[in-house]
Amino acid sequence: MLIGIIADTHDNLIPTKKAIKLFNNKKVKYVIHAGDFTSPFTLKLFKELNCKYVGIFGNNDGDKLLLLQRSEGNIHNQPHIFTLHHRKIIVIHEHHIIDALADSGHFDLVIYGHTHRPDIRKVKNTLIVNPGEAGTWLYRKSTVALVDLNKMEAEIIEL
Image (cartoon, rainbow, N blue to C red; front, top):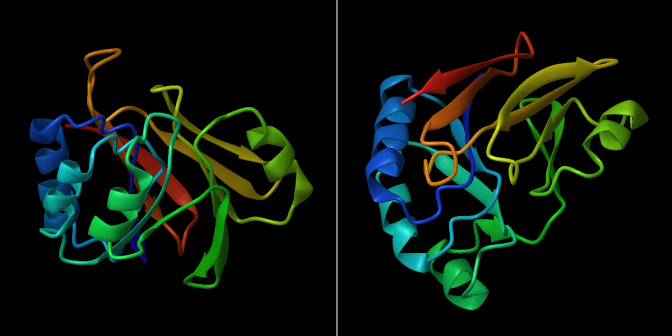
């Protein structure tokens, strides 16, 4: 099962549209947003996805009530823990406890954002993924990640 991972869109609609187009073209089955949508109007774009999505609130997400309403309940407080395709996944925004979560052995996939820097690595049997920043505001490089849950492999895609 191929999933898409995105984070730190920060209201930048052009790269967010590119990410959604990529996810649709790659026929991902699920998209996970690791926080910092920022404003509720960004969520209009996520209706164009050909699959379900889930996200978490990041530190820059302002109007949480409207974000929650516009996402139709698809955005959660962190940490958000769920199972997808027999894989236990945890999504958080900040990076401070990433290694401890992976080292615990409780999760197959740890997803985070916040740093705006792409990161793919394994700790023991846990895959850690930060897709980098989709919004381009910090480093001017728009990236997302694709994860194959069958192989537990990930790749960073520059938009």
